Image (tube, rainbow, N blue to C red; front, side, top):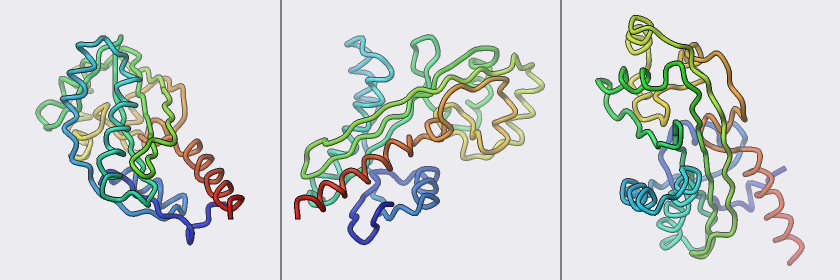
Length: 206
């Protein structure tokens, strides 16, 4: 079990979903938003022909680095999630008026959610992990998509796929492959494994 008394962990995000996952797992943390301009990294990686998975990891690295510069003695958890379809990164809907088109693009197809985490300490990345989940959406009619948009929370516009699987968004899918935590945006089991091993190593050094 993680010893919260010995843990100084900062989540480089104000994501309500990631906060809820950490809290539910009884992991003590503080949250500081990184305010990273993600589009710069996405655009640069696209020009270089890098994969969506690498882009997710690079974004997680960058968020961890930003917060680590002012908090060198803490563990900084950077995280990112990217939705991609046939190799193309799909940006978050951002606005409710974009949600219909976003879901229509995914309708009838299998897309991938890649979630990546990076942990920085003393301005150095000491752990990385990324994971994919494959989600196949029903071939939805325009009426069905409009009904989803009408009932979805406003918060889904800031979700990578335009849905929350833990709410009404689950009705969009006929098949899901992968970790539930990856779909929610934080590969929690690998993170817990790292934190347990990190604390054991620190204890062994004492």
